Structures are given as C-alpha cells and as structure tokens.
Image (tube, rainbow, N blue to C red; front, side, top):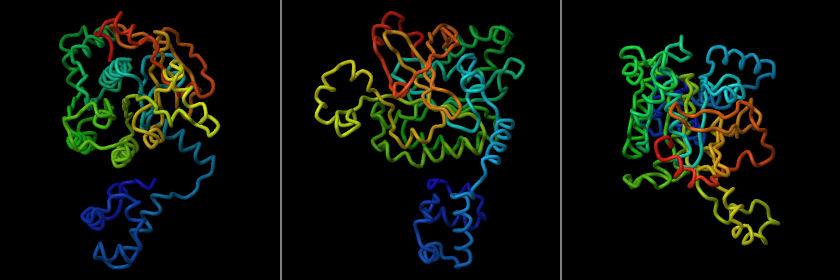
Length: 374
C-alpha cells in the first residue's frame, strides 16, 4: 500500500503535478515527511498540504469493511470483470473460470518448460471473437527475452481454433491483434510499461503479457549496464499492480528460477549443523530451485502457477491462489500448445506445492526437440 502512485490517487491536477515535479511519487514518499517539510518542498500553503496528506492517507489506508461488504464487493467485481479461460478444463475449474481480470498471474518455471507457449495461447484467446470463447480484443505482449515466435503463434491458432483460422485472412487478423514490444534495455522496458496504460484506453487492450519480468534482472540480458537488482523493482511492481486494478484486465507475467544458496537451504536454526549434508544431497538440491525476483515480488502476485518437470513429466501447479486448493496437473506440449493429460488435479500437500523441480528435464528436451519448448 505504501508504494501506491500519487498521480493515480485522484488529487487535484495542480497539486499532483507539484508532487511529481518534486519527485514525490508514492504515498510512502509523501507520508514519510512532516507537513512542514511538504509545505517547504511543494511551496504551497498548509491547508493544501493537509488536504493532500489526508487524501493520500485515506487512499493508502482505506477504512475498515465488514466481511459481508467484502463478499458483496468481490461478487460485484467478478461480475464486472470475470476471467480469461485458459481452455485447460481442469485448471479453469480450479481457478473458478480461468485467469482473473484485475490481478497479476505469474507463470514461473525453468527455461524451456512451456511458459512462452502458454503465453502465446492466452494472447490468441484474448484476440478471438467472443462467439469462439475469446475476448474479441487486442493483447500487448512485452517480449523481453525475444522468445515470441509469430510462426509458432499461427501454428497454435490453426491447431487449436481451426474454425477461425481456416477462414480467409482470419489468421492475419488474429495475429494483427497481438501487439509485440521488444525492449532492449531496462530503460526501454520501463518506458514500455508507461506506454501500456495509454494503449489500454485507446486500443481495446484485453490482456497484458510480460515475458519475462526477470529478463533484465537475472543477468541473462547484459546489454543494459544499468539493469537493476531485485530490490530496485519496487516501482515496477507497484505500477503493474495498479495497472491491473485500474484496467480490470488480466496481466500475465513470467518469471525465471534460480538455485538457492547454502544459507537459504537452512530454514531453521537446528538445520545449521546439517547444512553440508543438505548441500551434498543431489535430490535435495534439485528440489530447491526457487522463483527469481524475491519475496517482495512473490507477495505482489495474486496467482502463481509453477511449471516444472519431475522425472521427465511436466506439471503445472497452482502454488498460490486465494480461491483454489493446491493442485498439480500433468501436461504435454503439442502443436496446439499446452494440453493437460488429465483434468483431475493431484492434491499437493505441505511445502511441496512451492518447490520447483526439473528432474529429467534435460533428457526430455533432447528427446522432444526445440520446436515446442519455451
């Protein structure tokens, strides 16, 4: 809440512009200063400062609500917003309809597991006519890692929705509804995010995909020497969350994985003596891949879907959701994209739902080939 952007709080434009000019951008920036400090920095009267601080405080710390009013609000929001069905029946049922509008949904997993395949299918679903189960709109695809393939997109569409793609020029029309941005630096990525809000208002945007959020943070993209560390993403996290709430569209963000270091493997003091034994255990190390971007980002997402491989079998797990039980669905990747092997999810108990496996994944990729991985 402290990172809410002041420019989106409904302050009078004159005072909001002054805050921006003085680089006081978030509620934390403003509320960390005294009224006298703000009066001096903004060069306005005390009455204007008090009015602005009161408004920012109310927006940052809204009044309490009853459980009944929260229930009514949630039902109303779901009625107005809804979900984007993934066309994966079991997963859609677990998520009560699909990917929710007005929220962040994260796809996290090792490279080549199928995150980009999933994203391209969702982009097509946003573009499809409503009569075919789509949103009949446009999708913005921020392709940070240059993994988006228009050829693969058309293949997925033709195999998944032949009744649409066999019509004359429909393949070109569907592909034309997906707007691809390829920022080459962290600065360009930031600028792309700022342009998205205006595009959502002007171009009937029904879906935003960022593939991947970790691209400029993990070190894989070395072209931008100013690429930030994890803790520097505070503005971006706040902006994307507020964008989801403002636009009421689904936002999909992919994330990479990393290995835990030795200290992270020790979760409790009594494990410290056995730290070296844990590190020597390959099975234990394999199960200790974690999502990149850290805990701050993990708390920001509403739904986390983990894509992993265990003994050569791929799974998609509902690792975080306010409405779904912890379930895992085995899946394969075909010419039509991701397909569930079974619509009956496997209940996952305990901390296993948060682990990320890639056992047998290298051999699996070799046998399948590169065409359907991503």
